[in-house]
Image (tube, rainbow, N blue to C red; front, side, top):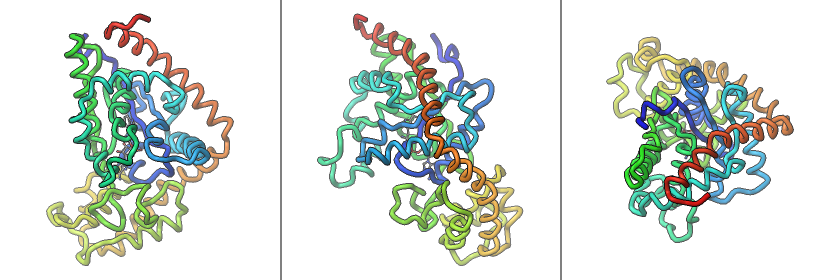
Length: 338
Ligand code: TYM
C-alpha cells in the first residue's frame, strides 16, 4: 500500500475542557468547516479522554461536551456530512493508543513542549495520561487512516510525533499500513494571541477573561474586549514590514484577516494610516457580525440535550464502523490472536 492508496480523510479534535475561544474558531473550526467538501471525508471529535488528563469536574465535562458539540454545529459542521462524536464512545482510540504507547519512545514524549509547559516544575505530580497524551492523539488520527489534520500552530509538534509513530510502526512490522499524515496549518488564524499580551497564545485556561474572546460572549463583551486590547502607540502601517516587532498589532491584523478571509497584505492596504481606535471599531463590528450568529445558535442548541446526545451516538456508530476493521488489522499485523 502506498500513501496515495489512502483515501483523503480529515480528522481533528477539540478538548471539551470549557469554552471555545476565537483561537479555536479561527485556528481550527473554520478550517474544519471549509474542508467538508470533496475530495475529503471529514471526522471531528470531542476529545473527552484527552480532557481528563487534567482534572475535570464530571458535571462540567458532560455540559462542556454538549456545548462543544453545539459549537461545532453552530459554526457550520453538518453532522449528516461529517462524522461528529465524542472520543470515549469509540473504544478503538484507547486500544490503538496502548499499542502506540509501546511504539513511542520515552525520549520523544519527553521532548513535547506542551507537556513541559503544562507540567511546569511539578513533573512528579502530573498524571501519566498527560505524559502519554500525544500517543493517544496519534491513535485518534491513525485509527481512521486520516491523511489530513487541520489544527492551529500549537499542535504542530504533536503531529510530527504522529508521523514518527506511523513511520516506526510501518518500519518495525515491515508494512505500509499507517499513512504519514499531513498537518494542515494555514492562514492568518493559526496562532491567535492573547488580547492582553501579544506573546502569549489566546487560551481558555488564561486566568484573565479579557485576554480572550469566547464564542459565548455577547456583542457588548466582544466590543469591550477589543476596545481594551493592548496595542502600541504607533498607528497601522500599510506594509507588512511596519508590523515587525509589534506582536499586539500583528495579532489584531491577523484576526481581522482571518475573520474576513482576506490576506494580511490586503488588510494593511485598506487600513494602513488609520489609528488603532478607528481600526478597533471596524474589527469589533466585523467580529460581532461573524460571531454573534454562531453564539446565538450555539446557546439554542446547547439546550437540546436529547438531540445532541442522539447526534453524538450516531456519530460514534459511524466512527466505529471505520475504526474497528483498522484496529483488527493492526492486531493481526502485530501477531495477536483474535
Ligand atoms: P485544543 O482543544 O487545545 O484546541 C483545539 C484546536 O484549536 C486550536 N487552537 C488555536 N489555534 C489558533 N490560535 C489559538 N490561540 C488556538 N488555541 C487553540 C488548536 O491548535 C487545535 O487545533 N491536542 C489537541 C486536541 C486533539 C487533536 C487530536 C487534534 C486530540 N487529538 C487529533 C487533532 C488531531 C488540543 O488540545 O486542542
